[in-house]
Image 1 (cartoon, rainbow, N blue to C red):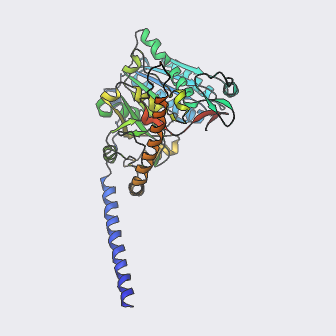
Image 2: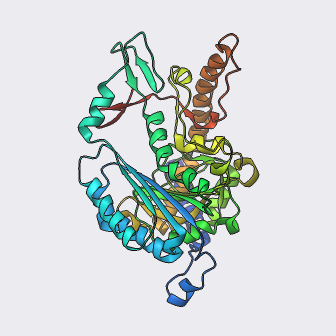
Image 3: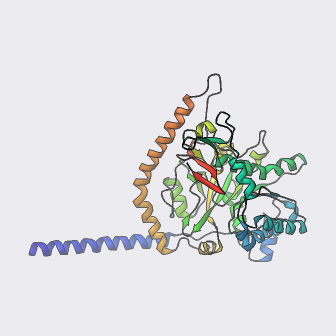
Length: 417
């Protein structure tokens, strides 16, 4: 009896000590959360005199079924950017294709407003959803492979690859940049915008990342706060995926420490809703372009995001780095956006949850990363060994972007094979 009572008392004391340590840790985590830094443009005189006010910006975007956010916030946010930087300093380029809603009409409304401001722009309205379906179904014959198509053994037919398709559309949005250069007009920044809720302060804060010293700088994007969204393109400075969707996200000690300080985070790749580029590589000869991995590599059931590969191909990445700015948070709807606009993010509850989720997942994530990396490296090595005789040695600089997936266009969307 005494022995059981002793064990019970010992267990209670142990639980009390553990609970006390947990509380101390939780309080420490909550108190260490840094404030969010944002450029303050709340006063007219601050906006008028801001150093970035006359920055020239090439804005690019692609659209499909984005009508709700265009009409609720996005169009006006773009116009606010034009008003801040100056109509003469902005070029807007958008490409739409395959929408089932009124995205085309919403973009034309934006174009009308841009024209009224005398802001140069190109708004390209692509195929209808039925024309896109026809393109997907117009497969090459089994004995005549074409670029951008991959063999589906289960169906004994070729399928249109998703990533090269998206890369082609993004390159289309960038085409006016080349034409404008030939006319003697160049830009200080290239800004890519997803269909996210944002404001001018977000963009100015992003532009000022590391005092404008970067090859590219990205926001953090959210669909359901506080879980970040863009897992496909984000890799830490070691080229690894994140531990979890919770803050502070990263496996790399350097990236995780920067996240905990709310400082710019060094990464190998990011996109995360909004990304700004130093434009120099897009003016190089040949210019930096979006792409997918080679079809022959995709045959090994591998894929890589065009939004990740662009950083691997960018010669400025090694010189200036790619940086994630955790102070710039954007949402895919208004609810998510206003949930993440708090000064200290995440809130106390999710700060503690996030820290412990990452701690508990660290070992599992590390093992999973090693296993996934081994699969990718094995297939990549085999692909290199199968270099055709007489041809250049096969190489893929975006190894960190590669994942064990195959993505194809399907119906009015996409799917995995």
